[in-house]
Image (cartoon, rainbow, N blue to C red; front, side, top):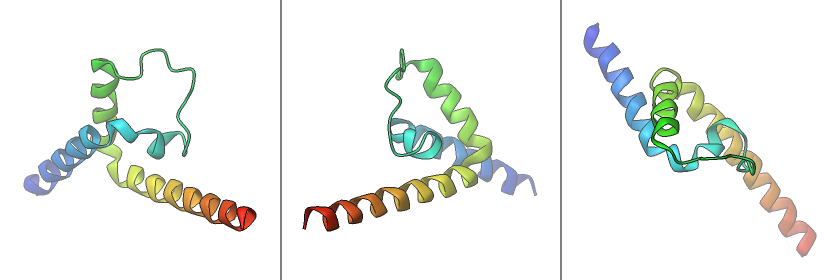
Length: 82
């Protein structure tokens, strides 16, 4: 049982560190926040990794939702341009 918990937490931490540059897809929707003061500080990276450590399954679901929204917008834009 402990191995499952540890692997869940390690996978979440790795996901958090890997997804930090594109974190806007998982939390704020497909657009980056324009008013962020210091978006790439060590504290923000650690905080994002901590959040993802425990919530990475939900983050993946929200990332899929954002990807679907972006794909739908691109498809609509192609139809408008054509």
